[in-house]
Image (cartoon, rainbow, N blue to C red; front, side, top):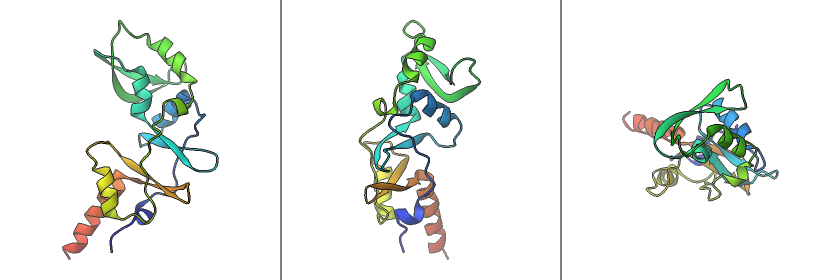
Length: 168
């Protein structure tokens, strides 16, 4: 039997709200093992997704590499994500202060690819392997509400397990 999103998904999903501030979400990303959050409204509907790329892109220019500090001075944590920085074009302190209190709704991706709990492994693989988008996780939505998330790693484990079963 082919696995479905329901059998692959993690149901304990960490989310953020559209009005959460950039600085808060950057801080939360520094403390988790993944690189993005579904953005969910008060009714539980997925209205966006925000990733490290979306947030770090706020500080990206060209030329050099920099590690972005998280929080306000004194910076006790860093987000381990390198960005290109042109020292002539960017004053990081001003850039951080300017963007820190922006709501996530201004930087999130609103065109979110989701799956239903009944979608099968083939449909999920097609989405994760899409040539146009770099998708690492798929929110699972049922009746308009977030019920879980399927990460690329969950799919790889399922494929591994199916291959092992077929060899028996």
